[in-house]
Image 1 (cartoon, rainbow, N blue to C red):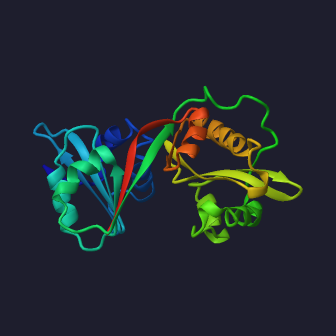
Image 2: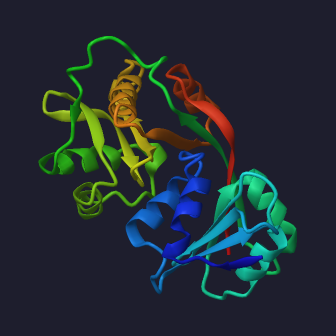
Length: 262
């Protein structure tokens, strides 16, 4: 049986999604921020014959995300998606989205597969002194945004001081950086932070300062601080070279993340 969830279902819902906080980063964050009774967010639960919640489907504005650790009513979730006309994106772990894809009636115009990796311990992080790496403050945002906007791989990204400021002020993002002669030369950031997990994003090094290990240092400092707060870290990547760097500091692939655009 599938039905819309309310706050009364929160205990069972949290039990389901917090078994794998890195995999459910977005769902956990959206529920923490907005709860169950918003006109722009709806959450459905799939229950087995004994009333046990075995899957959830979250719709936040124009985005759907399904999750289940095992069997669930994939056709039922697809029916809900098919019945909406105001969505643009369906995303989630491939093991889950692949079960619902055959039942989707609306044609998607793109489908992207990314590696999904997580880190839940400090064992492989750099152990040397990293005191030269600083956490960015609001006053540092102009230099941080300047660095992000000159990285070729980030071309087309929406890096603005206003967006960064808002994310930092509400506590869902942080950034660490290395500075050389007043210029930011490397940085790493989080996004979508919640009480259980955080996503690593925008790891970069200035084109004139590559091959110095700066990005690995920023990543290690960032990840250690987040892990010490009791959170898991996750990230997407599609570049095998970047994946090798992430794995040297302990990230492990946990599957693929799919993104369908309609």
